[in-house]
Length: 456
Image 1 (spheres, rainbow, N blue to C red):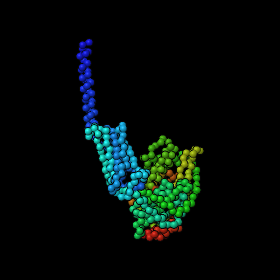
Image 2: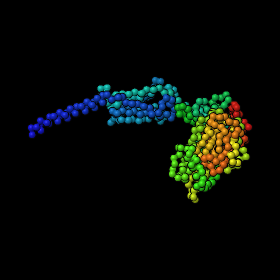
Image 3: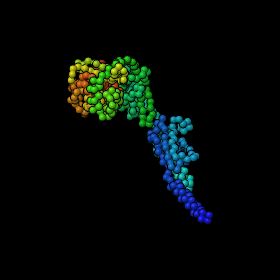
Image 4: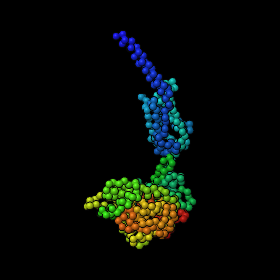
């Protein structure tokens, strides 16, 4: 009994020492805790009408309070003033000036101050304070757009051009047609720096009534839309059923897989074909949009485009294809180009002047050449046998660049020809038509002083 009593003080002493050590450890951490970490979740340098101040505050000891003030001239506004009980490890807050009825920004410079206090034992138990301060500029006046061309006619899947004036001249502008965006460019050679033109398309798959606007957006994210007189002619595109045979699969699938390591083997010819027809087709379209983004901002072409000489159209733009294997439907895709046939290994000429962006094996198109004609306009030549040019070469319209063949997803020897405008595949027939090129592009450029415009 006595030995047990003699042990008790030792146990109490150990417990007391442990408690004191733990208390000192906690106290030390609370005393030595860092200040809160303040970060802006989005830039707040140039502030527009729809701007949002988004900020994050983090602190392991917990955020106790947050205060945000904005000063412009001699006027200071408190826009956020909050205390948190219990303290929070993380705080995310947003302030939208446009939604505030009492506290509004005004045009011009300003000063932002963010102050956060944590729940540590620093500064005599009041917590430690962190401050973030920065200057900003409020730009609240949106750009202005004046559409100058008066009549615009566009076929579904086709193109037209609009000329407009945008101020200030340096803002981003162009045409929005549903989800498709067509960048506007300064009018070459024009004396007015605010003059812009945009060649745009009405996408072949755009639903009826899709809105089309000229849009401008400045660096403060102020955005403005302008309507213009536009008549859209709807079109119906053909639907064709294409049977898929095993001998065709055996011809095209191994070849494409051997050139395209990004496509994973699905274990059967049919599954591999479907992966190529769907996934690789989409990847090729995305790559074409990326090429169009690298297009030179100048006219590289001077005359209407040319169809492959003496060729017959075997498949048209935007044909909707239903693929059938052993009597059952396995896929549906749209054919975005023209299949042009003449004779086997026919010489393929460049459709117009330009610069070669690609001369390589390119997915579903097999051996392919892509030519840049400027301002986001590209032509594609697919299923080729060989290349007479390489990437970076300048070419002239009518210059032989390759021979036709059946590489890629092709059942027989022919040329697949596509026109791409800023990533959107469009109907090449318009660009082959001298009257269309004159009326929709060349005449408008001359009217507003472009130098030099494409001509007949």
